[in-house]
Length: 415
Image (cartoon, rainbow, N blue to C red):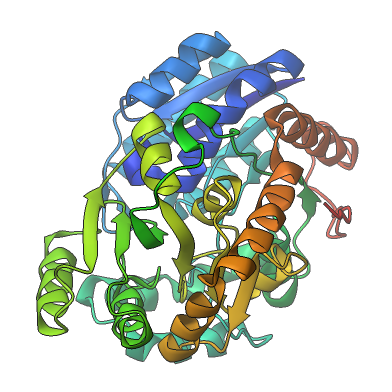
């Protein structure tokens, strides 16, 4: 089987989807003939993964303006030329870049090449915390909370294209994406590749016992949707019961405006000495900082369906507290290492962290965190699940160049 993967290749901008690609690429190339269309020039992490896997690669110029793809027509033409040259059995768009999701299917259909998209969240919406069964209704409810003018313009001008999701074939890589898309777009053909993630075991030399500098850690792309500003409210409440409590924040800001707003809010709440910004970290630096904390605070509001950051924290034996959002229930619902509190309640999250920081509770939850993370210890299992999903999809096609049937191919999985 020959698979052509289309993906951006910069971890800091592509976040979870690109991190996943960098780790699973060597496993995929052991199981199939893989060709990578790299959108933009690879960063060091992706370059090393490409070299380690030996995957053949074509690099195409790529840039996003907000959600818009620059030079879309040219890019689609370049991708089509690669497909004609390589003649893959299947083309996979590795995350939901909407302009490509809309523009590629008719082109690939003319070439007789099956197409899948791998959603990491729900197009337009990320993952609203209390979904109805109506995509349109949830979209309308979300609009008032979106302040950026370009987002309004994008949503309103592309809403008519949402019907594409009723038929666009997809490969789902976690239980939360399956939950949302089954509610919103149940008719689209789907295959499941679960487990869809793994986490490298921490280096014991970097994460062994020792002094803990921080009571709490938070790690994510630093945006409102990830609960960035909620962390300040959480620390304000936590410091009432633990006056010396400190938090470390790991990640890069979505933009300068968000950074200015966060720093101003931190000053206003008197938390400058309580909340330390570690910046964007990788590798051993990230492991050391995570290992220096005792718990993990993750008040994500509307931007998660799995959270590799949360999984990494659990692998580092950090018990965590989240809002009661679908991803926390669908993926992490059966581990006592992740406690859910009422959605949006910073006070409840601070109380839960305070309870976890009790020595007896903390030691017990550490072990539970490590047990849960051990379920996701193998990128080999991730690669096998993904290739099996592609085979199942191709086996379900009525002909080599046909359109997938409108019946679900999702296979249930329990970690």
